[in-house]
Image 1: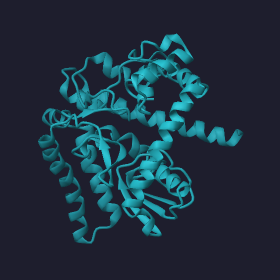
Image 2: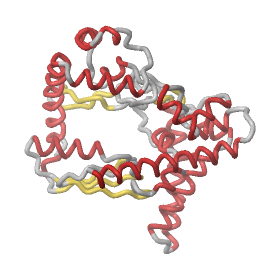
Image 3: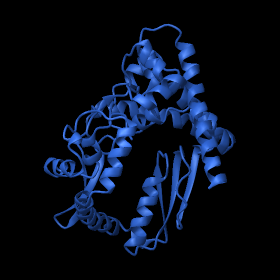
Length: 329
């Protein structure tokens, strides 16, 4: 699921052309012909179930996957991935899925290389795959209080690359090159904000110069980050809110990180509003605290505290449900 799900967006994740999408929609049901209409979570689950059962969808997906597989394995070998027994990657987080996918591709193509990943934090336990090691710096999947106070959405923007997302690889003039989406952001603005973000970690790194432990350094970085994430001034919200972001790998739409909203939009993100929205769908705020700083509403401190409480409550509920599932499985 994503913030603005449509039937078309789901299909575009795999690069399906308009002609291919319409052919699949005819195959699974005419109600998806209007592919740009926003769908809720229930409709998304039904759509995915129908796509899994469509031979046409799976045939097109297989062809695309095989072609992409040849390109990405060629790129990895070109970059020397098979020349080491272990390699390391650094990424922001959050589930270890990219590293797990890389390892599966390595194993399937005969690249006998283990991968060690260093991440800012985890929102879920990374997959347990042989040959994969994971390490989180700020928080792990079970650190509920830290996760509740950390806005990973705006972290994605703060540490974004000054280019579009890589959507594949292609062979050009004898070398495999990344194929990127157009960048929706002002490159100069990104570089200025990158300096601000790097300053946060520089402050944390400097604390280590005074014989302070690694744990203290990570705590310093966490406090500095969450100060910007959860309690931004209006000027900070305006600065970081300029990011144009798509939370879907389709890159089908882009929205501002922070935008002005009314009281009902903020209430909808709280516990009871979240429950209603899960049933009925509705608007979501990408960076809650940034939008709060930009908006002219009263009792902002209460909204801020209740939102963090909601995040913690949702995380606790999910943890209990996972435990019950394992226990009664």
